Image (cartoon, rainbow, N blue to C red):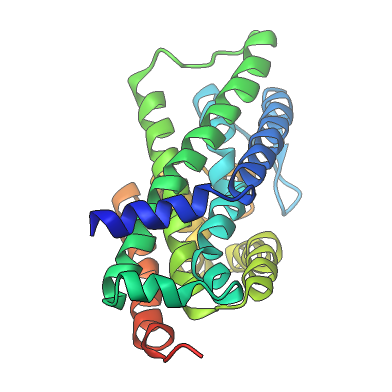
Length: 268
């Protein structure tokens, strides 16, 4: 198993895609966190219903530091999602299965290696938010709460949430084996479908509870910070452990579907 994990990890990091996506994520999250730090420090945010929402300094910091979990999870999702489809595209599955004929082991190795790279993305994205967002808050004379243990707990959970998105990406890639479909689907779902669904459901008396179980909301629940909830556009979040269980359930279900379908097929 160890050899399979090492082999899969090398496949991920020996291409330029992983660091290009990582660099893009860092720059994008730094910009968004800095801008969000300035906007939220002004004292009020406008919700999707037009109401003004006043955030406490702690809520401002939590929202800024976890903005990668709210808006940047597409990056670990894509890098994980391309793990299996890239092998299909470049016809490298045959040597992969020859070196490790147990396909369940191959899937497990891809999940572990994807999770490891996801931790890198999670750490980089979270640090970018802290550096840029915290820097802006400090320049404006606002508290950064970096001396508080609860803040570091939030940062650790933010890193974990982003790593789980890479795991989910690997699982998705075992079901959807087209590189184009994975990338387009990830962009469409994370940037349009789920945000719109969360906002729409959040405006109903019953939809907020349903929206809390969507993967994006579950990821935010793990970190404890939510751009959408802070802006008053959605309902509340699950607890951190509930969000973790929901994310793991998505990973488990999609992995089992991929193992029962794609990974059972003969290679042509």
